[in-house]
Amino acid sequence: MVICLPKPIHSLEKRLLKVLNKKKKLLEEVAIESSLSLDQTRRAVEWLKAKGMLKTEVEQTKKIFLDNEGKKAALDGLPERRLVEQISKAGGKIIFSELKKKCKFTPQEFSVAFGNAKKRGWIIVSSQNNSVIVKLNQVELSTPQEEIIKKIFHSKFQIEKITPEEKKNLEILKKRPKYIKEEEIKKIKIYLTPLGVKTVNSFEEKDELDKLTPELLVSGGWKGQTFRHLDVEAPSPILFPGKKHPVQNFIDEVREIFVALGFEEIIGSIIQPCFWNFDALFIPQDHPAREMQDTFYLSDIKMNIIEDKKTMQNISRVHENGGDTGSIGWGYKWEQTKSKDAVLRTHTTAATIKYLSDYKPKEARVFSIGRVFRNEKVTYKNSAEFHQIEGIAVGEKVTLRDIMGLLGKFYSKLGLKKVKFWPTFFPYTEPSLQSMVYFEEVNKWVELCGMGIFRPEVTEPLGVKNPVLAWGGGLERLVMLRLGITDIRELYSNNLDWLRRIPMCR
Ligand code: PHE
Image (cartoon, rainbow, N blue to C red; front, side):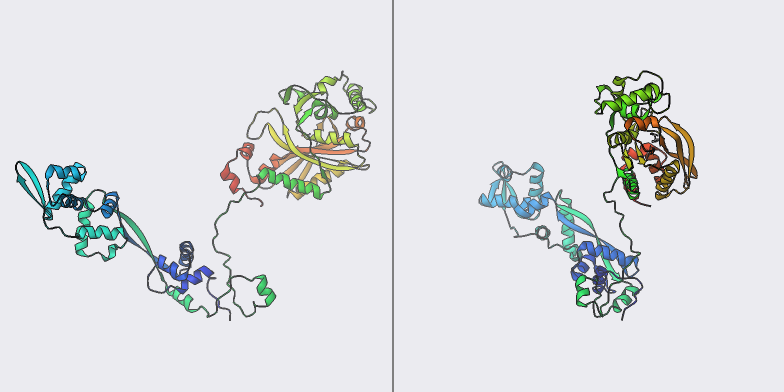
């Protein structure tokens, strides 16, 4: 028979319930009887309390300890005891000043010890030939106060069992500085409520099993057993395990989407010669984007461009007069030295264009995710350093519709279903489009990736014959919208509390 208990009972709770009844028991006692650790007992008590099966009562008591002077007295005897020992060593009689020297007490200690010895009748004081003589009288072997000190010292003193006589003497001891220490102690007593009693009575002889193990399954031993019900509503602690940074997490998600769409990842260097960042993309050498206020230059560095002369000549020709592409070019004198200037790449398009030059593919699908840099003022929406997602698709018959379809697919995999495309301008694509995505949470259309088909002025000098679809755009904006952040700086401020609470998925 399976018993239907109002709430599932954990095995710790069960062990505790079995040793409890209506009588109040100390938590420590219960722990021993149920063979649980104190910690386990405390936990099970809290759970059972929440289920209304037991109640607790706190009892405040005092614990008595010996302080430093008290400990000294326990080991060497009370000062008055040591004082009479000195007299006895001296043969039962001593001059007062002599005694004072021998005792090695502080003046205050000596006067207390002397006073007490006299009060107890342990000594008799007289004067003889102008000096004070101290003589030993009747000395008890032990006083009630010494007994108390001994008891506390040997942990045999229980405040609950104190006699009126002991109480009086303890009070006297407490007046001696640094003899007695007191500590308030809370004692927790536990007892069952009627519901607890009912639950205990409903326990079956045979124990419930906690787990269905592979062994039980193999042996068939599970048959006829009762298993502990799981309490799916039981509170659990909030855990903050180590996890990826939300930006990295998003990068990985994007990476998975592109890989699933049949794309291969390429990685480019963040330091690029102008040649790859600008020239190869048909961006004229006097283009405003190249200005220092837009681009970070590495001062005094000229980079070697490992490229066959022909490509370099082609690019120079296309800039100057359009080369074989049918266009008239930009009509200026292209300078090789300018193309060697080193920059922090301003876009990841530098990586895809280099790939095209290296492999001259007839067909390809590659993507890149990486950091880019722009000399911009850092504000809530701009950062000088951010990530871009970039990609190209090469094929004989690819068209603008394909790139719209592809980006639409990418966004929809991120959960963004409403996408619009807008004509725009980039020096290296024709036609060019800007994509806009609708974010329901903020009820806003947001500009995301730019895209287009690389112009013949870009592909022909590299020897790429088939059309190349290209797109690229910022990544942080997507992360921010997803996490509901309005300030880009928040992503990189390393606020631990925020990082801990950011969920890994939604
Ligand atoms: N490089 C562009 C940017 O940084 C994006 C882009 C890439 C546009 C490829 C068209 C083609 O915004």
